[in-house]
Amino acid sequence: MTSVLVLRRAPDNQPQVIRRDLSADQAGSGTNDLAPVPAVIVVVPKTGIASIGEFMDQLFGMLPLRNSSFDFVYNLTPKTEIVTTP
Image (cartoon, rainbow, N blue to C red; front, side, top):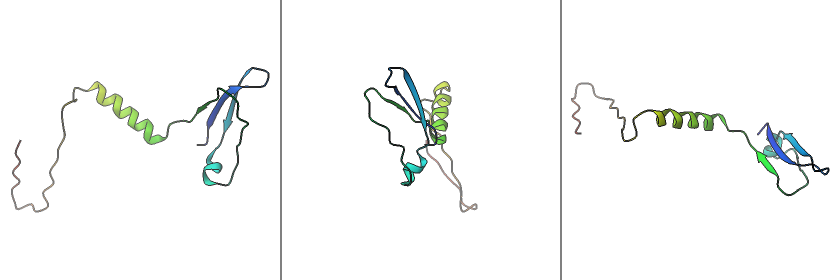
């Protein structure tokens, strides 16, 4: 929320890019009001977790693991035997 971009046309019909820090607005203590105009594009950068999710999607998209699953078992009582069935 610290680098949100607003793309719009200026009154002289030239492209205009406005960068805003909306973190104060999100907390309720700031105001970054802009006059509404037609055809505005707002670009909000991805969060860190969204970037990691996209990376993982790309990674698993390259690996032939589509219908595979991973499993693990942790034995809390080491003296007993664990029996798994397929």
